[in-house]
Image 1: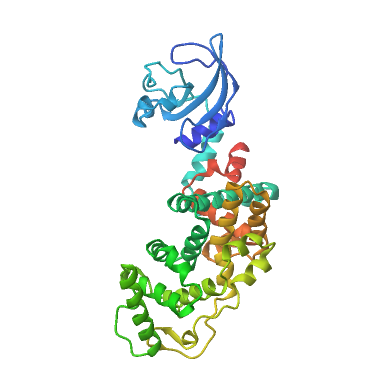
Image 2 (image 1 turned 45 degrees about the vertical axis):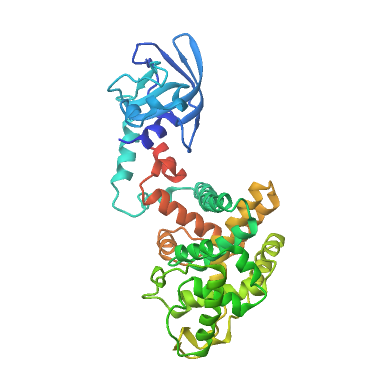
Amino acid sequence: MNEDFIQFVWQFMRFDASDIKTDDGEPVGILNQGILNTDSGPDFSSGRVFIGDIEWVGNIEIHTIASDWNAHGHQHDSAYNNVILHVVYENDQSIFDESGRKVPTIELKNRIDPQSIHAWEKLCRSKHQVACQNELVTIEDIVVQQTLNRNLIQRLERKTAEIEQVCVQSNNNWEYVLYNILCRGFGFRVNGLPFSILSSTLPFRLVESTRHNQFQLEALLFGQAGFLEEEFEDDYPDMLKKEFQHLKNKHQLQPLSKSVWKMSRMRPNNFPVLRIAQLAAILCRVPKLFRQVLECKDYDELKSIFNDHPPHAYWQNHSSFDKGIPSRSATIGVSSIDTLIINSIAPFVFHYGRVHTREDLSELALKLLYEIPPEKNGIIRSWRELGIHARNAADSQALIQLKNENCSRKKCVSCAIGTKLLMAS
């Protein structure tokens, strides 16, 4: 038994509520279970119950056992002083709020529908990566779509929470925020953190002041990333090194250690040095990036901003400094642009739209995800094997969120599909 399941039982009234009494013996009438709160604070808000002859309106808190109230520190938290009812599976002790008031408690043990318990335990004990995979064929398409819609917004909100942190740190310098998020995106899955550190340790004013000179910007980025600390045979990296030494001394820069970058078992197209070169090319050739991103109308227009900006010719036949390879295109590929839009640009536009009450931008962010082809990875392949196909990036993002936040953590009661199965039991 866990708290999530008790929340589900309370929210959907999957228990016998007849002749139910508080731990002090007062009859309880449930008028409204309240609204589930997914943030901090009591579990349900705006609940309405009768306790004795008095109608109460306020918060309702859920626990597996009553003593969890104290274990979670609610007795010292004023946010719980307006809890009107404490709902528990087992009442093992009386509890009091910060003011010393005894909080009325009801116990659901022996009142919960046994079939609901059995269905929940079956999901929890499943050895499958997706606990309900055998039952998915019984779920209506509309329920699946509702689940995807909800998870898409949750994934966007998780990403925008990270963007908000950058906003706070930069005092809402939106051009820097976009630059920081874009840098992080250029690290893709493996080097996102080092790229983020690079952007935060290199003064943005220097990036802005060198945007007109691609060679100087390359020197600044490569040097600060720690890739210009050794001796080179080729002229190009040697000139970059000399340029960075000048910039480093002039602006008192402290480069990162090269060791923070991950390069083992990586294809040359994903080497961080090439990604830095591609980033420099875009920053130089799209000087008004912030404005252009916000003025885009669709996916094709946004994609064109990042497309066809080749880095220095050196990277056409090098995978790293002093390491030659057969000639090939060093321009960022379409699939990489899609990944940048999905993970960086769309969340940025979505958050900017919300902060500035620009519904057109929030809608644009969603539109972009519906226009981009679905991602290709292990999670999406596993869903496809279960009969759920991602039609676009919106679906693939939702399926990644669903797998990571619900399925992998067995949080079936927080999922519309899991709730549907439990309700049908």
